[in-house]
Length: 241
Image (tube, rainbow, N blue to C red; front, side):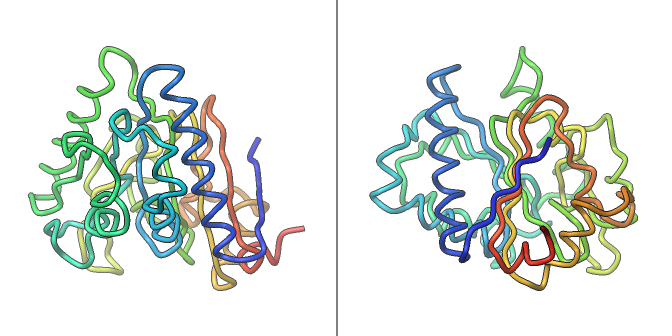
């Protein structure tokens, strides 16, 4: 069952997400020695990342035990202003004491299918011999209902074998590399961070509407044994009772 938590402002939402990150990092490190997290792009996660760079939160995390991945990436070089890696790097990774070898970026500058295959191998090798299961996957949701780079009507919606795949997004005329539902739903914790009234109607459709993942891919996120959280500000949750 999903947990829905609503906060009055975007800043309070970002702080709650930061506190969740820190709590799960501490818990995971105590339990099995490391914390594996997949980051999301977008303005709402950025505010959380900036919080993690502050003394208040950065000193609460043993960054030597944190391994950072990305749930999706645009097929652009790492220095591109459109790169999810670059955004996270500038927002907090260059500030906190995380070893460079613990930062596992998607090579968006490579050919899309090659980048996807290479990243899947990186994940498998990192988690081996155990199954590939993240401690936390962060996600956003577009106002069309997409999440990560799983867009409406695309093959990734029903991918249940591969962990990562390349995805051409017709309406954006661009290639993306994305985690698949098979990988996302295996996580111990999945957290959506959603802000703004622009997404409120679509969010209601996703959470309480008819199940139609080809049109609303965010509905495909249903962790098998993990916890699913929706962290919203009041504007995003305005149509939810």
